Amino acid sequence: MWQFFHKLGSPKWFYGIASRFMPWLLGSSLLLMVAGMVWGLAFAPPDYLQGNSYRIIFIHVPTAFLAQSAYVMMAVAGIVTLVWRMKLADVFVKAVAPVGAVLTFLALFTGAVWGKPTWGTWWIWDARLTSMLILLFLYCGVIALGNAIADEKSSARAVAVLVLVGVVNIPIIKYSVEWWNTLHQPATFKLTEKPSMPPEMWVPLLVMVLALYLFFGWIACLRMQNEILYRERRSSWVKAIMGTGNARASAKVTD
Amino acid sequence: MHPQRKRRLTIILFLLVGLGIAVGLVTYAFRQNINLFYDPSQIAAGEAPADVRIRAGGMVEEGSVERDPDSLLVSFNVTDFKHSVTMQYTGILPDLFAEGQGIVAMGKMNNDGVFVADQVLAKHDENYMPPEVAKAMKGKSPAADTSTN
Image (cartoon, rainbow over all chains, first blue to last red; front, side, top):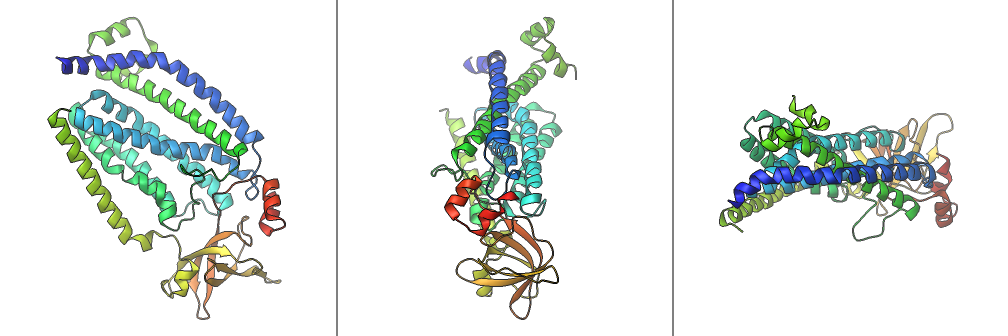
């Protein structure tokens, strides 16, 4: 009885809760993003060695950071899918994978743009860069596998297994710069030590990371809502929403 | 927790640990190939293969950079503070190249024990600071003078 309720009720409940949070997520994210961007690009001091070109760090680090933490979140959702068979967890994985892929691409792209003037090369096959490229392929694999299997349940399980297998790559990305010789420098931020940059640089960076987290929360909610509407398109509550002419929802349902 | 879910969770955790160990062993076995470059100590110990293009990296020794007045030939010593290797390079060095700065070079050892590089990449560390702070900390070291880059 409880299971039945849980399965039917959960997506609808999430849909409502998400609608309430989303304006706040988007608003605070945009506010912080503008603040962090202006602060980082215009007011933070230049670096003693790289001058102004280091400022791409204010985009590079947040995207790379979030690309990895999105994957960890997907892995947690993958465990929930496999153990508890919760539909919403699979909705999360499917909704977030393309976002993670875009973030990973942005991290690689900004890294290449940064690498050319500082290192002297766009790309090098060192452990950090290669493992990050593998992360991009993992995201693409998750998207492809999810779309390749029509049956909702088997698709959810297959994707969850792939996500979990890929999660070993995350510690490899994180520690690649410590385990091996790489061209990429070690992390500026460590959990146990003070960051190796002054506050007038790391505070705007932290603001940007926070802003991107909030933005990720918003876009995850938006995409999950779409996915829920599509999956529950035959249920009465979705039909009721459609009947009232929810413009946002109609986009996905018509495809 | 429901016994069936508990069983599934244990299976997943076991699989993850097993997978982690497997990948750990593989990367450990491949560590020499994953390392981007040999450091001077490894070259001195003969770990780097001769007559093969390899990457070597380390810190450019202070006061070792010599530029040929008639060409783009530069020679410098690269050190890891235990051993050092003399390198030669003909070409334009990256902006961040400076004494006391990390580099990674691609090239071959010649018979005189000199590393002839055909590509030099600059490596920078994880420390960022405003130019004033760097100047105050380093006094008049060459690295601080390149702040106009």
